[in-house]
Image (cartoon, rainbow, N blue to C red; front, side, top):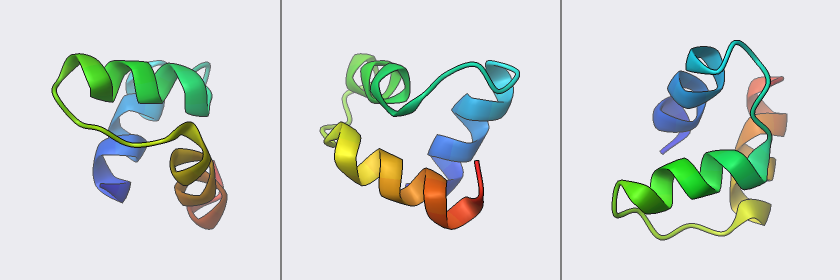
Length: 46
């Protein structure tokens, strides 16, 4: 999951936050809360 978050963040050139990344993942069929994505981003320093 962390790799997917990082990939989407890099693809957006650093402009997507947790909510937009959650939306991208939801369109791909992933069900994750924006809080979890926020934690993953923080752990990776994004």
